[in-house]
Length: 198
Image (cartoon, rainbow, N blue to C red; front, side):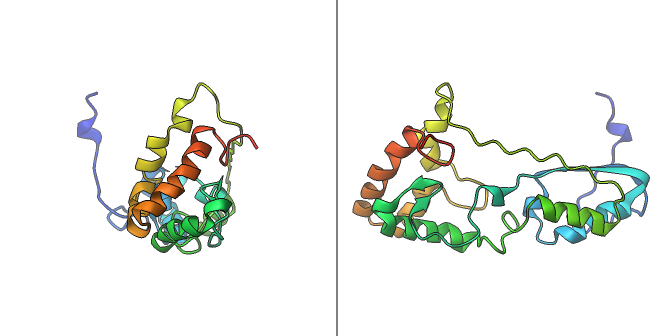
């Protein structure tokens, strides 16, 4: 595009933009960055510091707390699916994820949209607009991926956690894994989960 000469690349964490001078940029923008930042409040302060007067901040963040419980699972539900008949196994597998990403302290789970508003106001942003979108709907019959067991079992929910298959291998015997899959797989394939029909 012929714009390389006008570009400067700086490697810095969002909560320490020290290589960038005060009031030196017009726009700061992030997409799915703050979910990896433990000190989000400091990141907002840094965004505000580097922006010129009248500068703009645009962020887009998934609110993972919206879909995740804030307390350890009792095993009745796993990823929104009814696992009461295999509660003992759901607890074991769920504990793997809760150990790796504690709901109350992991940066991906420890905030919601209200926190982002508070951080922006606290950093000094005078005008804040929030667009929050949440969709809860039955799976579409045309969306094959929504009911694909292989994707559900083999693809981690985020880069910091194992896949379901890996978590099961860590804590379940082959027989337990077979029993867990025998219960959970039909629910996934039928769309009987958090967005599925009751």
